[in-house]
Image 1 (spheres, rainbow, N blue to C red):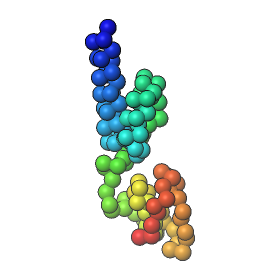
Image 2 (image 1 turned 180 degrees about the vertical axis):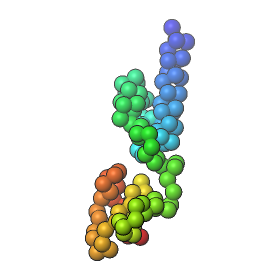
Image 3 (image 1 turned 90 degrees about the vertical axis):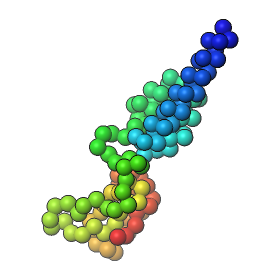
Length: 113
């Protein structure tokens, strides 16, 4: 019985670490917090992570972000005026426009280019 409980405990810790590593690669949110949520919440934490914790395919995550803004896109839209430092979202507005939060990730690190 003690061996079985020890196995479950080790499995639980390994699962929390695995989710934390996966979240640091495939999520824009904290891998440590997702690993902790899975460790505390068990199978419910895993289900919540799978359903809402992973970013949708195609969205850039923390390991795939670059320091350069995305391309300006179609002609006629103007130059990129602001870039979110958290997710790379670009904005084409007048230089005098103030942007407080990113419309894509909700981050507050939107800076003028």
